[in-house]
Amino acid sequence: MVPPCCWVTVQQFLEAQTSRFDSLVPGDPHRAAIKLLAKLTHREALVLTCNDLLLLLVTLFVFGLILLPLVRRPRSFFAH
Image: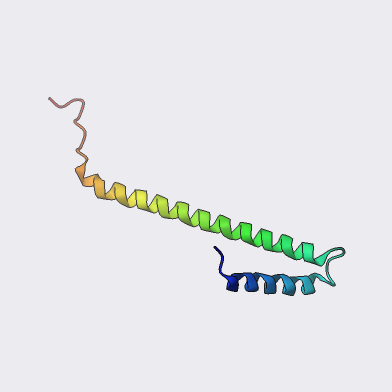
C-alpha cells in the first residue's frame, strides 16, 4: 500500500509539470505530465532491475571464489 504522503508528492509533481507544459506543449498539458511521469517511472524501474542483476552477478562471483579452493587440479594426460 502506498502511503498518502506519496500521493501528495505525485500530485504536486503532476501539477508542477502541467503548469510547466502549459505554454510549451500544444494540446493537453496534463496528459504530457502523466506521460513524463510514466517515462520517469519506467526509467527508474529499469535502473533498479539492472542494480538487482548486478548484485546477483556479484553474489554468484563471490560464491564461486569461496568454492574455488575445493576444486582439484586436473590430472595431466601424459602423467602416469
